[in-house]
Image (cartoon, rainbow, N blue to C red; front, side):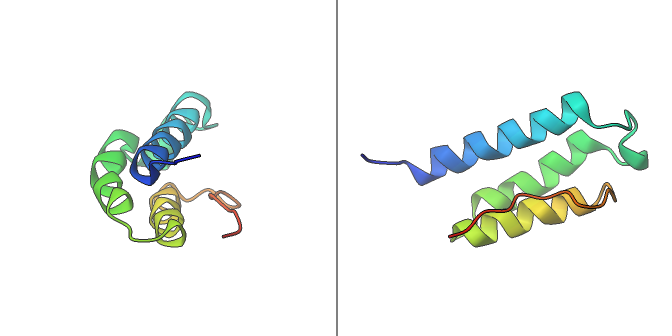
Length: 76
């Protein structure tokens, strides 16, 4: 099976971002502009050279809304 890593990362980013957009317990995202964070971090995440770096950058974005125990975690 061939996997387009760029397309897969795009889907992961969009689905994870949307899940939080629809379900985060604080509709004000702790005073952060969630859409602006997506605009800022998505290009960096999409240009990551490894899956680990992609997750790291996504998790940096999550850290901006200051909610503990959140993140994308997986083994390589």
